[in-house]
Length: 85
Image (spheres, rainbow, N blue to C red):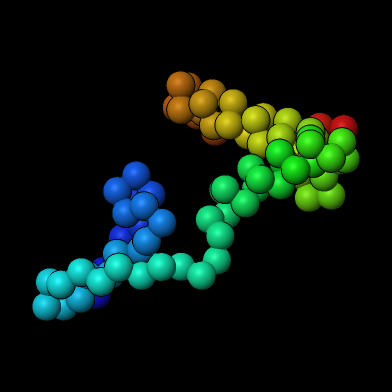
């Protein structure tokens, strides 16, 4: 069997293609992780509290990694990522 999930095409469902070529739609029981993370951030802002699981530092570090990846792709060379303190 093959499973497909892409919310642009499948919506909230997972599509399961069986060996006979038929498709079954499966509704996941859990929340989409990205949506849950965004909701958590919105809730923290609305309640005026700092998140215990996401932070400005974490966002900065994630952005730093993305920029280093871009630099590596543009130069074709490995790029060292040092810790930020």
